Length: 444
Image (cartoon, rainbow, N blue to C red; front, top):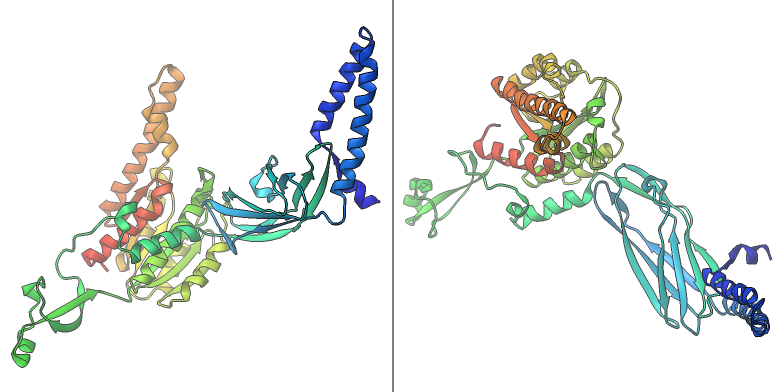
């Protein structure tokens, strides 16, 4: 009996019926004939109430629902969720679905309504947009079923407390992986880099075919085979590349719902995948007040899973990062000349100058690329027209901060340190572009 009352709900349409009856009773004070009509309508509503309960709570009539979720959600991307519905009713039923979404989404108004024909299966899809990594718990799927009379509703509940892990952007990684294989990287903004000089290593000697460069003709092999032979080259491989991520307080700043740290993590994952496809060794290091994680540069197809698991557990701290400790760790652990991509952020030129000796120390033995973030919200302020004194003040301060960012780039370049100044949403594209440029120029 308790279960029955827990699943019994009154349909909103019933209040409409009762309102009509109440109006009839009210008007019967002046029109006598409406009094009898009101009682007849009230009795009909009572009968429909009982009939509706018998229809909906008949054991032969049942509803099933289940949720189709991916194994992992991709942070900072739109992830699809599907719900399948089926029933055993002999007539059309009207269904309202309320899915209890994880608390991280802060969405409490989810509602999907539809009518399903007899014995018909129905499915629908909605999307979620996670902005934090971690465990996301879905609650129950609440299905409210009503008949054509729409007097009462019966609630069914399915799949309570289902958990999905939110990982760094797997969707973004797979997108660039696919584009790299299909040679369509320019479609998303990746540049074709012109090679300067010979930065490739020898692969094999092959027969000359039309279109081969005459400068690659191997005359000794040509004399032996009595036919034209050319040298074939390939990009240099197995070069060590490290993604170094600052997890200090400067990386906690949010843009479009995502922290700078999450943009850096998504970029590092996609970039590591592309580098592995190019047969380079990839490694990872995260630091703030201490060295939190270190993965040596290796060339293994399965190494990306280890990088993914390491990135999943990273979070920002409220400490100032210790660049001196980073310099000491790189000097001790990274013994071969490597490409080091340092994801960090400086809001003031004075903050950069304090860390400059350590950055210079790293760049003496390695090719250091410092990744800085543009504050896109400042660009919006600087592009607007100032209409009053307060607007002039805000625009002046915004232009000052924007100018300091460009000044930081010049300061780093003056000391021979490569830089990437990018909006957060274009970080992955610009990072991969820089990597391809460095490979083409043979800087490592």
